[in-house]
Length: 465
Image (cartoon, rainbow, N blue to C red; front, side, top):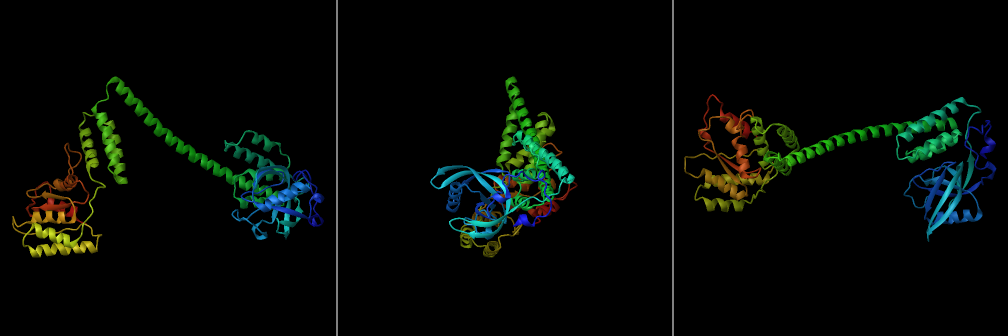
């Protein structure tokens, strides 16, 4: 037995309070497997039991007024644990209260008395029984280090309790009232939220000094986690409070303007513009720019020329078909019939168009596909583009580039100018109402160039896939 092997002198004032004499602990105990928790000596634990083996165990224990052994399962999902499914160290416990909640459901309260080590199982049916040996704390007489560790444990426990407002104020008084270091370590381990494996490690640490150091580590880790969690929570609440405050002040300002009759059409139009931007399906980077520009617009007086520029810019963003597209119909037979119905002859041209559509059907990830139609005026270049659009089910827009001399017509004007507009490509996309129309760049050979730039160079950049 373990008591025969222990030679070191014990200090009763240092260990946990003796709740049961060592000689009163039977050599064989009925074993109650415990899930998702670790039970410590000196603790009180309410349990709900429903397994048939456990019900038979508590009935016999209450009838014979005997103590039981509570041992934690290694895996909580195991319904019928054996020796390999239980930890080797547990707690001797006494059933202090038992209530029948239903036909196969009992509620009981157990009190932890002492540690024990499982030597081997001697019975598996109708419930587990094991041969055990009681385990006592190992400590030295008048150890100053243990006293210092106890002071640090209480100090750290107070800090953890202060960081957890859901705990009652009496928790600090309970910690301060405990004079036995072993009992203090067990109590803190039982109530700190750490993994089951860490709690079991505390239970299995017999040396009191080592156990207290282990509990100090667990409490330190818990304190740092709580501090970080509190910092994150404060930052989130501060950000939410700022946003809510801004919203509240804006609503107040709006209500005051309504009462004074100063809420003009500009505010209503800006609200409407904001709703249009929300419904436009903007990409994240565009939405970020639009949101920034919208906030800037609200701060600009309506009479300023900057107001018109910013308003026009946002109107264009809201009107563009960011997420609207038509599905392609790449049926070659359908395309052939549409081309034949719209145009007589032109067999080589129509054959080349059908070959192109066939390639698109086989390779649908082509970027910037362009067909160039060359011929004298009136031979059907523009109408062929309309036929292709009708065949594939896309919208058709025509851009006449004849006589265009300013590269801003292609790329768009700078926003520093009053009346600045996007280029013709973007304008045509807005006119089409979809993001993937077929565009006919007509009279591309009639592009001019002057001191304002070369539109053909800008067109090369725009059409570069």
